Each structure stands twice: as C-alpha cells, then as structure tokens.
Length: 94
Image (tube, rainbow, N blue to C red; front, side, top):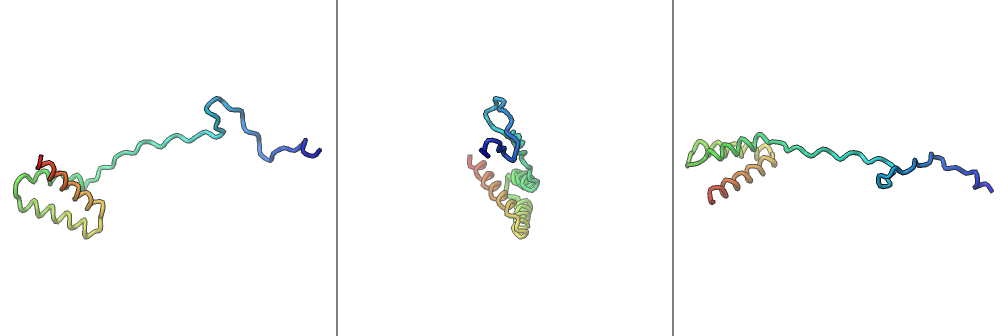
C-alpha cells in the first residue's frame, strides 16, 4: 500500500513537556499599563483647587483655558475640564 510510507510535509510535533499541552510557547503577557499624567489636567485641577473665593482673574484664566481646548477640538482636555469641575463641586458640597 502506498499509505504505509507516506510522511507529512512538516516535522512532527515535539513531545509534550507537561506544561498543559500547548505546542507553541505562549508569548509573555504585556506589561501593565502605566498611567499617563496629563499636564493640562494637572494644571487645571491645581488652579481650580486654588479657587477658594470669588476671584475674577482666576475664573477668567480657567475659562480661557477651557475655551482654548474647545477651540482646538481637544475633546480629551474638555472631558478633563468637566470632570475636574464636577469633582470640585462635589468637594465643596461635602
């Protein structure tokens, strides 16, 4: 019979080494993500924390910063502005 001498076109798999049965070694898991510090958010939050009384120059500065991000279509920064204002309001309420 012709099938008796047939061999597959690829080398046989190596024997299992007791690690769970996978032929190919799995790649290592990716390193944990490092939190990126947003300098705009940090600065905006810091200036917002300094707003402890009705200070027109500080309010104007915060407003101008927010409008610049809006005009530049920097939606991540705009989200940061909203979140920081919400946090500040909740901090004052408690």
